[in-house]
Image 1: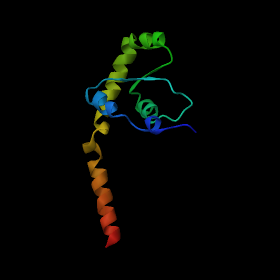
Image 2 (image 1 turned 30 degrees about the vertical axis):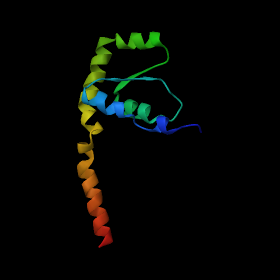
Image 3 (image 1 turned 120 degrees about the vertical axis):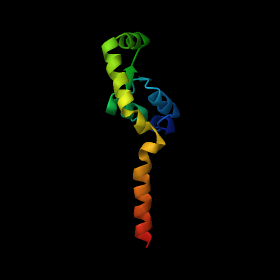
Image 4 (image 1 turned 180 degrees about the vertical axis):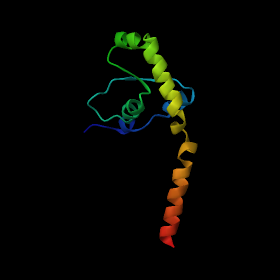
Length: 100
C-alpha cells in the first residue's frame, strides 16, 4: 500500500544501461510491487541482491553474467522510443478512424 512513483516507475538509467548492454543491479524487493524489478525479472536483465556479499558473489559468476549480458543485448531495443513507434502510430490511426 506504500508503493510510490519510484517503485512503479522505470528509471531513466535503465534505458542507458540497456543501450550499453549492461546488466542492471538492484536491491531485492521480492514481495513488493516494483516496476524496475518486474521488468528486469521478466527478461532476466540483471542481478538482485540482499547483501553486498551476495552481490559480489553473483557478479563473480562469469557464466551467469555472460547470460545476463546476452539477454540485455537481446532486449535492449525494447528500451528505446523507436521500438514502440509502429504500435503508437497504429494506435493513432485507430483513434483517428474511430472519430470519423
